[in-house]
Length: 147
Image 1 (cartoon, helix red, strand yellow):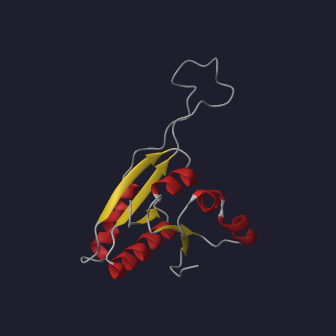
Image 2 (spheres, helix red, strand yellow):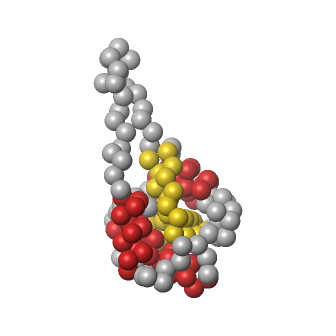
Image 3 (cartoon, helix red, strand yellow):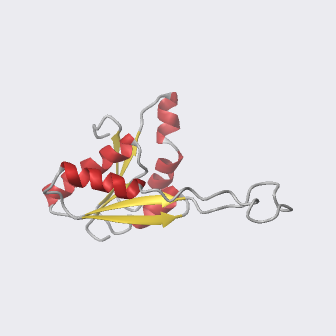
């Protein structure tokens, strides 16, 4: 990831805007973009230790093509876009995004400014990224203006 711009992608409008912003920035700086989707691993459900498998497991998130579709949509919008690498990880999103951004130029995240003091200052994943990332973290709201 050295020298790349890393972007968290979850398919939300804010993450799509974050990827578009990162692509424009990467194009201006002659860098590459790494789009990262993080999924929680399957976990045991509480109180199911006596349940027969697989009913005691929380189902993993469906393996849709959110990452692929988001990257493809952004590539179509800008045919001269820099190289975008898609990366899937499993684990806690904030920690895994910070790990993926190690050695990158920056980590770009989308967020939705909704209220309640912007969801108690940006939400759990963003707070985890801010706590663990060793690179600058750029927040791009759903309306597309950088924060």
